[in-house]
Image 1 (tube, helix red, strand yellow):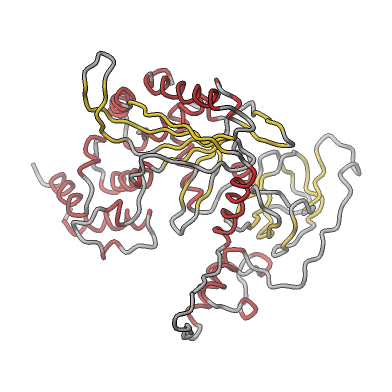
Image 2 (cartoon, helix red, strand yellow):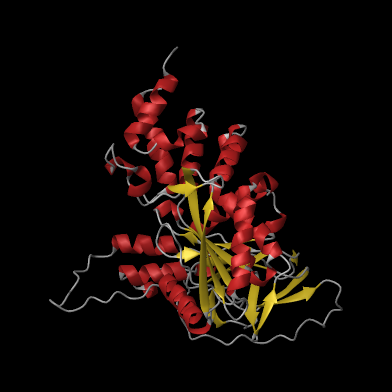
Length: 371
Length: 83
């Protein structure tokens, strides 16, 4: 059972995508695992053959429990890791996490539903169908008593990660204001030659600048593990994406510093679409080396983020707003201005280095053509 | 294309990005992005869907005008009138 989040302790096998005997290669999706936040497509990191499926759909297992046995290409038969029997979970109804959550919210008894998913797993639509045929239940509320809503899985997962962050990470915050007039003018001209499907949003330009900036300040790009900083050789940009039903996911765009602006925009659209339709992959969930949060769409001017552990930094962007701006030649004018913030782990870097990063970011956005 | 068909295309596009909402309940003057909690990516996806469905070009410079249902209809309708 892979770890698919900073504080994930267990997961539910929702569905196998392979069967014994199947040839698999690195990057293939072999299973779907349900976490508190979402169902995630699990990729395999070796090339070889599926020998045995140990866990069954519906099994809820601790992180680290073997769920399958894979014969890795190039190894002699019998040299695969010894099979470890998965701990047998107590007999329980097989249902996807989303179905469980919905059943809890709608007051539907899972034991009375026949699942239509693989191996009889109860899925979301089974619960919705059951809820429609269920007699309405009159809610009872005690007058004057506090009405405590159960903490949803998504909220719980975020609560765990953020509480850990504030408990363990000594944050420091820096912010700077960036004149975006050159960047926006450049982008407007860039987009004029393009069809609507291939136009670039300012958000993609900002991500590109962050990725390039991190190459120059690698101490902000990586993890704090075993009391030391482990910088990542590549920039896997975790992008905070709000979900329509509430909560957020932070999937990573891999090797963002190597992508062109067009590739980054396409990757961003792809990952947002898949995050909102519940089709993220395990590597996207686990391999982010820094988080970028952009709340400008909601009118927020300054973002004071909470670092997602074990990462060591978060970059926040607010709304680009027209503000009075003293230009270099001393004339006062109105410019589109962006407030960029850096939340960083003081164990990994000092304010001086963080300030250098923001300075580099500013410089990159003043010369967008070079991004 | 009639106004009703244009409006239907708008509603279908909005349902794709905000499936939990009923766009028919929106006031014609309501700010779409605020009323449906649509971010810039979803708004771009919505405009792309309109472009594909209606075959109209929507320059980036016009995005800022397309804030409400009525503004969208007023913007799109003339594009289907005979010259």
